[in-house]
Image (cartoon, rainbow, N blue to C red; front, side, top):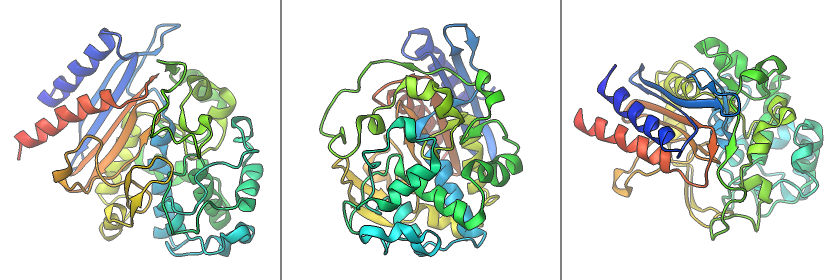
Length: 363
């Protein structure tokens, strides 16, 4: 066992042992090699079932890393261009001033549909046609491309409907055929977990019944269910089985393996990799009121990284405290998934600090 693996294993063992966490997975690749595959705690505290590195955990928006990657694969395989109009494939989407929207706008969260239409509740999310019809009819909050605002749940449906119309396949099938099967990580990344997989998934638990309100709450635009992750939502069998590609179920190893494949030019060529981390939009997130630097499909920068680092890392966190990112400059693919939902990224920060210290020591 390497020193880095030991240090990260000790850290997550301590977090579980002191009751801060109930179950944590961490996986790290560097330059194509898996250098950390650590796990601690339980998959289901009620039964005492242990968590393993192969136990999938519903990790909310951490799966946006996968849906964004699939969007790049659609371009790499010739189904779309970044500047393709959405209406080229989805004509009815052009209603109410959305006719100029492109895939680039979708990927940079600048389409102007950050929130689900009010008629769409969590119970309607599994109804793909209903959700997409509501999005097509919706009025954007700003002209596509004019501003950026986190598209919490709408993002995955926008990417997914373009994918469906371009290929005739739903996102769950493209994920399996283009990513998990070729990389040998089937059963580790799911949009729409199959019925037979449900008993093996981890169970989420809520640290607090309600997220604290604050200036970054986003509640003025997003419905509370879009912004405050709920264990009940992530444990719901109907949600777990549904193709909702803004969220999903993953192992840390599956996420890190996907990002490692990107960095190793196994999924896209090295020229396209530069597009994944190049600045595509910079401004203020209209949902949270915070500075936003967006590449095509991903926020730029690593959580907790000092400003002077000027990172080219990119990747999405997930509500409740999960996170995955790729860092082309350092050859690092990182993922952390967890079963206890908390309104902070303290566990991620404690683990990435150990990784940063390790990388500083080997320069």
